[in-house]
View 1 (cartoon, rainbow, N blue to C red):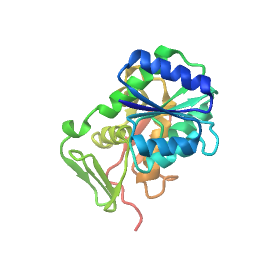
View 2: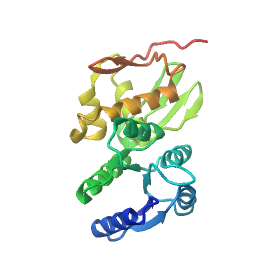
View 3: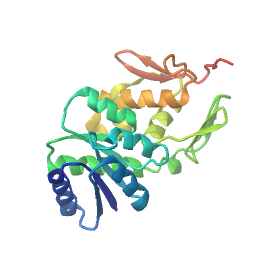
View 4: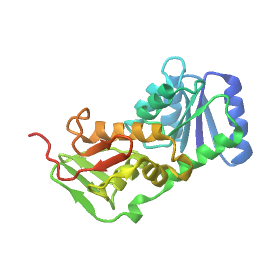
Length: 234
């Protein structure tokens, strides 16, 4: 396992290194102190897990996350000093899989790292068979491939899991807690920030007009439903 830690605070980097070495002694750990170093280290070492501080010199963690998401589905955890909803949402919308607020507990950090790795390692492609195609959106579940009007769309493993769950239950209202439990785990049933951010990301990638969705609909206070027969404008 290769782990990249990007943070401009040496003390934080040292604590993170010690934490991972304590629990994963065989991990190869690489570090960066700014956003540009983080991007260079990512392409050089191809890590299996990234921890990015939101506020870094040269390029912010959010910018680094967005750039990496254009080419990779690697699990990313954002680090922030603020426990505010807007910071969490910004990180998730940039493509992060999770976030940890500083100061953090060692056990919490390891638990979250294991959770994102577990989700990324869930091989939905070997479980889900068949396909979906309504002329606008097509999904090959066996290949984990999604296309919009024939153009392939890159989804992260978590995005694909969420979309698969919605599409495989067409027209059905799926409650927040059910979606969170099935995609993120039973410990996350109250974390609606995750769900809102990922629904927004799916709409941005899949809907003809993300501001006026016709496929992934919100049932306020309850959950979401997928409407497969909707026809996009010509």
